Image: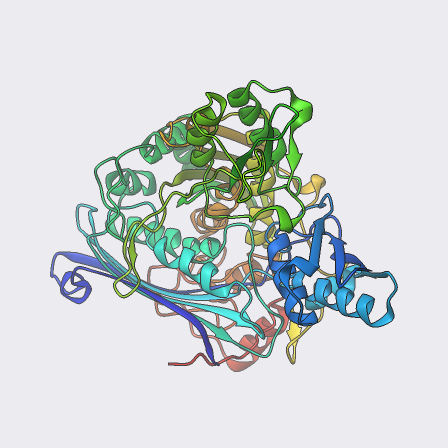
Length: 610
């Protein structure tokens, strides 16, 4: 397919490092599925003519994307396309650029008819045509010395962008710079591509290109620990990024690096060492095996807030309205505190004629600018000299070399670690998550209740990605386009979730805060699949870990149920389930065909460009 975007990272000498005699190398190819955003309300727009232009009112996350699309479709000035963001019932990235299409369609119809137009998708229509999480194929080689120090990582990261580019370039970039996880790796080679295919488009989704590559990277760490005879937690502690270390892009970390503390607190809260020994001793005594696994991650953070004084005593204008993520409750109190202003003076900036949203901005701007405004150090006037209409803003900037992938990709990072306790039914392949401990360094937690809610929601969404969620396609069309056939976790599937919030203040953040919206989902899947391997002896290289997929892997001779274990080169042709050990028996053609028929995965052949 046509390449929509490509990025790379080059650091050190990967081949030399992996070729050393004292280095243990593990290789693997991992596959991740589409994931549906499953927001509460489907996409919808209402448009009506207004003077020489139109007004479009609808469900969206980024009004300026919609404004540009409407102006382009109508061939009019941006000022003639007025976009009003409705209170949005969930987005998760699915309402960033994707609503541009229905917004432009509604605007064209309104101008053509001269009448108001309402365009509301049904759930089936929304699932059939709106963007999803990118399916991914990740090939990795990871090497470490025999005492556990990582020396090199090589990553070939491929995303299926679908029929349209949407936000594939920035999604791919995020995954590229986080390809080796929150670890010190001196030698790195990452090649990342997003390709166009004749399928439903992929786009922004909570986690933004990282859940795919983190599933692969954390699985590699578990396999490496197994090869080295080390505890998975000990291997991660040994290689954890700390203040003074450099990321794979050469960004030297100086402040707010709480990964090591997050690891320790999650291990202590979950009773990692004690319970793993208990489960290991109890293994094989019952039909359901229980064990624990880990997943870890770092992530960038931020969005935009600006100051605009008015004649009523000052008003705060936020570039983000929120879609149920708690942005209002987190941003508004800190604005009011800096201004000494009553709460009723806040405004939400839903009309893009009044400003620009900047998802790469940080609360650091608000932290630094608003006190200056409140102390009267800045006199704001517009071009005509009238007070109160000028804006005060600023952006945190970094430098990055796109040719080598070296530099400060983001100004700061949030850090996370997860422990999952899971039961696997050895007869049916059913996997039940009992409890998840999810730890996060998100800087100063301004609102603990909202923060815990973000963690709980993100973990549950991550469990769906790990265990049940995937779209089946035939000739590029989605077959399971409603919630009766596309399965998501419900409250009945929710395990006990323990949010562990570690506070490492970010000096340039508002009250020291960083982000907590995306990290909870990112490393859940590898924690769950690690437990499946520890409990049942099945190493899954493809998610979701549906009962059919786990059952087929167990019956294929790759699990403890059959008493046989597969060599690293053996795999179920359908499910890519592997473990390390002695070679497993070869399956005959009839048995392989039956396994494919049982597997819920519907393969979509697509050949990437070289």
